[in-house]
Length: 213
Length: 213
DNA sequence: AGATGTGAATGAGTTCACAGCT
DNA sequence: AGCTGTGAACTCATTCACATCT
Image 1 (tube, rainbow over the protein chains, first blue to last red):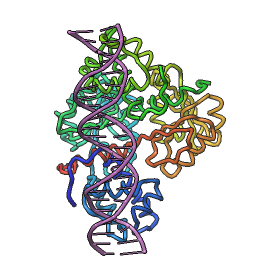
Image 2: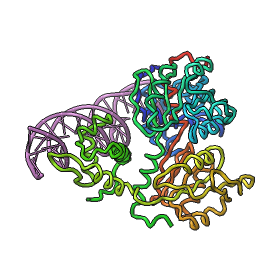
Image 3: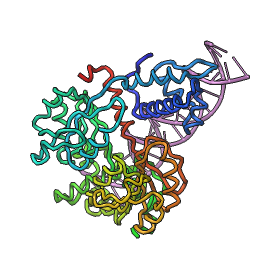
Image 4: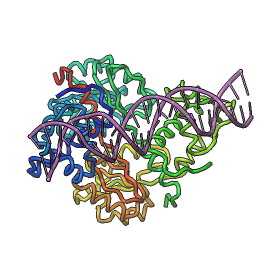
């Protein structure tokens, strides 16, 4: 498996999709599948499946197709989902608390192991089985828990400082929910999820509509 | 203002970003700005700003730049953010409840006005100032509240059916948090936000790391 | 002079078409 | 024959370079 560094986010996201499809097939007892059939079942593109996989090696058997279990295992390893990734949430307001409760119930390789907030009123509370600690202790929380992913759920004006704190504390990647571009440290990639942008994209399509009752 | 239908999602998302930057500048009392300076301040591309805007009309003054208030107003209208969009949440589990609490506190043109769930145990509960009603009543809830956006927060295997329900109930656009591709009705676009995919993308960059310890 | 708006050039991403393996 | 893996063609997106307007 030639580990091509620096695949595009688009490709990586599709690999996640493929993996999910393969797990679904495993649940149905399917053992072999062609790119063609995979594409038909899940509304994907057969060529694109092959091209995406080709970036990381040769996983199929010509004339036959792919071994479902094998390919699922390969993609799991490729995406780094074969071991636990511990996460710490920065900002335990509405969104942070919501994520703690939501992600806390998630199975799989991702586990929320800590949450911090700057507001002393929130420190000490328990949210979804998690004790909130003070932001000043972030580095200690990260060290104690072995967190490698930071979840940013702070207001826009605090995002950059909190990201920098996370970098100093030693996390390796950050998922940000703050509606702002964060200037990135080269070794600590940020992935942004901006709910407002998504809602505003939808609003664009509602312009012509009689709206609001 | 020539309303170019069908701009790419990439362009629309950047327009949202520009609008946010302009509001920030308004807060600072800036009244005029060039694409050049806007790009420098917010780490954007000056050419791209101009190209993006060009799809919808001419908003600037050559040799001068853009009027901040005017452009903000134009983009607000363009994106349909000049009036309220009511939203109904389908699936009041962990994620749905989290979103109700989170989005409920949000200002701006988006407002959560209803939530439904299939589980009778959840019906009647109040979540973030919202009374949960039964999924069977979805069409009535949409009609009563004037909701135009549906928020899908149900498990993968229920997503397609719930999307179809939303379409029948009369919403015009859907924001889905379900980890699955939904087959779309042509008049009801779906925007997908998949937290797992984003986490898995980050995990890819952690493969080399000593992790979980 | 100075900044916008835009055709032309480049680059990224997807699809096509087929060589090559089973 | 059948399906993968891949160079070539094509489409979509970004960047460049400059004509145009104030």
